[in-house]
Image 1 (cartoon, rainbow, N blue to C red):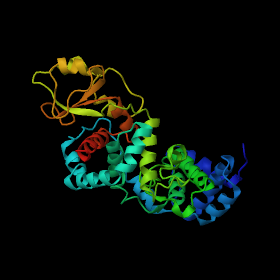
Image 2: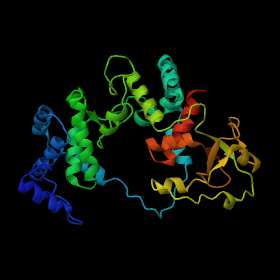
Image 3: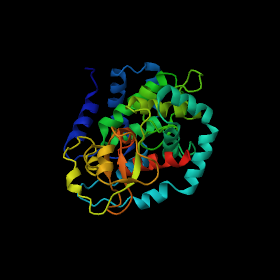
Image 4: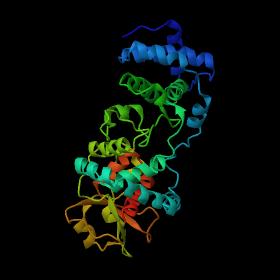
Length: 341
């Protein structure tokens, strides 16, 4: 283990006290950078990158404010209906721009789908949901933002690791000035965190770089690579809208499993049944036809009984891997259906 100065050790000990939070000032931040520098060195970041980046770092109070302003999730709070979210996220403008992007990028999208098995429209829908098709990517300095969030301490382990990975991106050849993105560290068209960029960003235009900030080809190839890596099954839809018959006995399809990840998201879904079993229970597709009988799916009724419901395949779980929110994943699926019409 590398040694660090006693002042930094005392600072770390203070921050580890239950309920303690570091003072939000520049002197405290600069003291914490000693710890971050040691972590970067231990992770193999080059001396040249460390010496170039650390002197530029100052506390960004704005990102700390934004992080602290995130709503806390109350597991007992009622879940709102999906319809208002759908209206705001799958509106005419987003669909129209998505269709334009879909047509403009077809020559790239077709090639990427052939290579990965990820549908063209899913790539476009993620692009649209994340950055409005590459137009809203954020302008925060990523190393500074992540160092500030790590210093604040609410999610120190996560942000410190992502900070170190942002330095590894520079070591890999990404210009430091290109590291711009959201206040929480997500970057480029796919809104990848540094750790995800290092694992899954791809060169889609053959220039030898994975430039997710300026290259649409790299953005789309990187999104597809993420989905392929997460287990997307080619030839299977994400799901389909269905009508549930009156008098349907929901007690017969209760989900009895507890997910260790995003439990509240998954508890809203039923247990798994084949499409043939759902059809036998009287469910009726609202638009597209039934997938093959053997495909497994869960049922979700995001606006309650009597409203549009959805059967969700394993590919829906891949969308949740990108962002673990039923409202997000449903919107990606529905937008993907709309842009390819």
